[in-house]
Length: 297
Image (cartoon, rainbow, N blue to C red):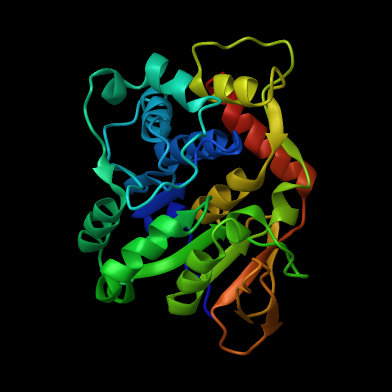
């Protein structure tokens, strides 16, 4: 499998699929995405909130507005209730910081955001980064299979735990959707496993108050006052934009399956389209991500 170029080189487009709410690292990952976009100039085709939480899309918009990004397509999952009660910080961010939520403007359906991003992308050029469950992506793939085959160039997912393939939240909380996506996707798939982001915490220094920053507030509210957290979602976004750099290596090419209990066993297979990230420099990546988060703090 030839490793696709990172977004800093291709200049996009990218769609980010997040389950913002069940953890605060989604807010940190959005901050990394928007900050690096301003530095490298890749295009963002849209953001999808894969939960049905009524404040999730507003929380995404709050971070977008704080980083001074133009309005972009934001979708929310509507097919069925899915993690609807993730309101530990979503509600506060939406009501305090989201221009679209406060203006009463509705958000789009997640499948329509996927469809628009695919239609407007060159062939095999769209990068999709998932930092939540696979329900919204699976839903869109079932609706628009030909578009995905033609337009999707790379899938980067914070999912699984490697090399053992142990159960991980983003997979086991909707194993059927993860199984469908991984069985249908034909482009290269790079997995940032639980073990990568669990190696170090990122966030904001203790004792610094930044109530005007929705990312800082998400960390504080979710952690009951603590303002750092493990770095799962941030590492996936950082790799998608910047590539391996000095921080990562890659596993050999693999085939991978999703079991009913959400495990992800894999085996080396020449020509396989799955690979997982291997963390080489946790301290260096921690410093880099903290620097990004704290630039706006």
